[in-house]
Image (cartoon, rainbow, N blue to C red; front, side):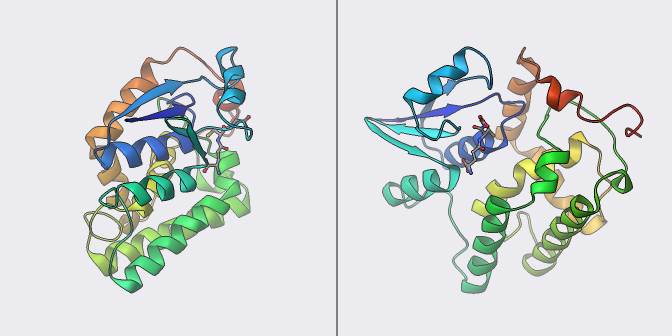
Length: 223
Ligand SMILES: N[C@@H](CCC(=O)N[C@@H](CS)C(=O)NCC(=O)O)C(=O)O
């Protein structure tokens, strides 16, 4: 039986994108159940997960929620699904930075929320100092990964670290964040991915608008 994946809006839901990208790049068939956030349809989320958050994976009667639980569960059944680099140092760093994303970067999440179809140019200096430091950290880790492993992805082959950071790359595109040259190859690699282009087209075609995201930055803050 194939999987079903409950997701939010493609434009706004970065955790949905991670689970979707993981399954898609793993070549595993699945059906999408889209529940746009904070609409009447969103109320159905309680029938899928007590946590009331997306993504949720349905495998028959089995439900798995939280993106990292989803790829852990799927990989236990499909070991060839997208995973971690095999070389120990690469794997240690890949796991660490993916965990860093999962539990941190609150400034980026709050000030640069996912909004794939929008273009809202911001100066880095207009952001809170903590957010600027988080962008510095992401730039440093991407630059170090490309410097060490040589691309085309953070650790050579496409891995769960790339899944974890793909939505961050798209946020930097939305807000036109001026990145150091060493961090740019990752953004370009993400934008060139056919699966990401398909997701972005679907995001652009969605009709729901979340004002608290689209109106977050006042015209004065915009470049
Ligand atoms: N750590 C969770 C985060 C899930 C999450 O926060 N999802 C957001 C959408 S991107 C959500 O469902 N928000 C609904 C709400 O806050 O009520 C994961 O990895 O799946």
